[in-house]
Amino acid sequence: MAHSIELSVARHNPSLINSILDVRAFAARIEKNTQMDVSSAMREIISQSLQKRMLGKEIVDAVGSAGSYQLLRRYEKEGKQHLLFRMYGDGGLTTMIMNWSSGSGR
Image (tube, rainbow, N blue to C red; front, top):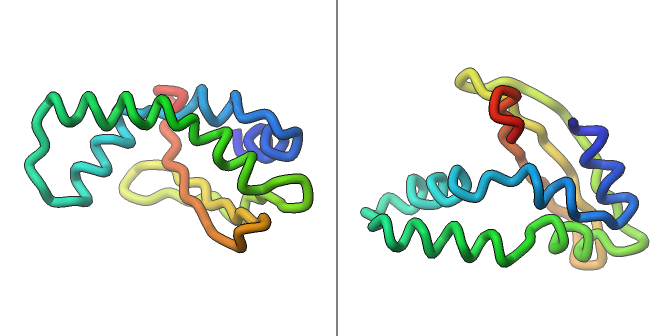
């Protein structure tokens, strides 16, 4: 999967990242990390907002034509697979971690 993600970004095609992003799980992580009580209505608003943002397109746009998106390593933590990517583009350098659950495909 990591190689497919790298190729997708290199080809300026955000569809793979958009399709594998589990917005409900991402919204749940946001809620957990804010340490706030979030209502089900707010959870739904967060999920809808994440879907509209199209994070795959944001990544492709940030990398641009001269940047790169490269897998640095794959590791397991608390029984979950993680992919650590380095993204370099006009905006600078950053790292991104994707949690990967092979059972759900996300």
